[in-house]
Image (cartoon, rainbow over all chains, first blue to last red; front, top):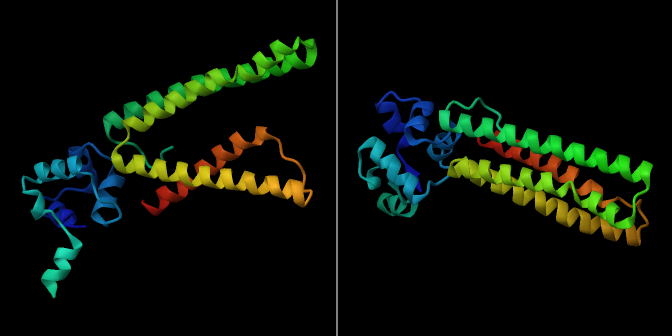
Length: 71
Length: 138
């Protein structure tokens, strides 16, 4: 799964620690999600969407769908 | 169990509670083991008392387990996954390692290692594996 977390965070001038505080998770977790090492659970993905005030599909996208669109 | 400073107040509180609970349970564990060893070595108690004294440290050990589970539930999902990975890897190494060592003792006549070593070895292994996993996900 791909995500735009890093871009969205940068647009708002938030550090990873800032976002982690807003999501009530560790900074390490934010970093793992941003770098694609970890895919968040559905509840956390919804929480992320709420924090950024965006629909979930504008933050997360499926790898296969992205690859198909590129072809 | 944490390598970087905890900034989230909720996590900080949970970590303090965990350290306190583990310290209390650990201190009780040491007291039970030392008291048991003293009684068994110097007073030569009856067999049933030896058995009781031998399993008595399990009570504080269960308190440690409880403290760990409470702490685990206070973590976020990614931290929990790292803990689970570390637990799984260290358990697998200990289980298959002790099994292999058993065959080495039987077939290759290597020195016998007491079961007393399993818990400290597991604890050390878990700490090392968890540190490596945390470092990789820094």
